Length: 195
Image (cartoon, rainbow, N blue to C red; front, side, top):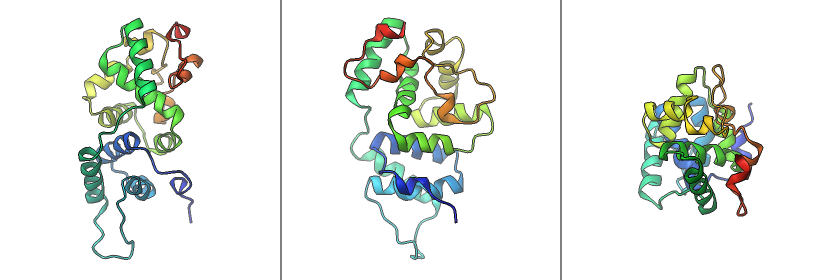
C-alpha cells in the first residue's frame, strides 16, 4: 500500500485547486488524479461514497470540479503577492503573461499542497511541462513558451532560471533563481532587492 501525501496536507485553496484541476484535465494521469482528487473535491465540499456504483469516473469528476471552482467564488492570488508582482513588473517591465508565471512560481514556494502536486506530476518532456503551465494559467502554449524562454523578462532579470532542458519536475522548472524572490509574498517586499 502506497502512502498518499495529499492525505496529510490541508485541502488546497481555491486558486491552487483551479490550477491543479486544469493541469489534470489536460494531463490526465490516473494515479496522480486518484491521489489528489479527494483533496481537491474536499476543498469545495464535493464528496463521493467510494462504494457507490454511481460515483463518476475520473474525467467526469475533474470536469465537475473545474465547473464548480470556475463558477463559484473567483479564485484569486493573495493581494500581497499580486501587489508585489505588480510593483516588480513596473520596475523591470514584465508582461502580463510573465507576471502570471511568476505568480505560479511564487505560490509554489508558499503552498505545500501545490508544491507536492507539481513535484509528483509525471512529466517526461520539457514541452509537457510548458503545456501544463499553459493549462494551469489558462494561457496558450506559445505564451507559456515565450515566458519561459531565455529572452523573457523573467529570465533576463534573473528571477527564474527556466532553461533546464532535461528538467522533469515542474516545481524545479519554475524555481526562482534569486534568493530575494522568495520574499515576493511578504508585506515588506522591496523589488529593488531583486536587481
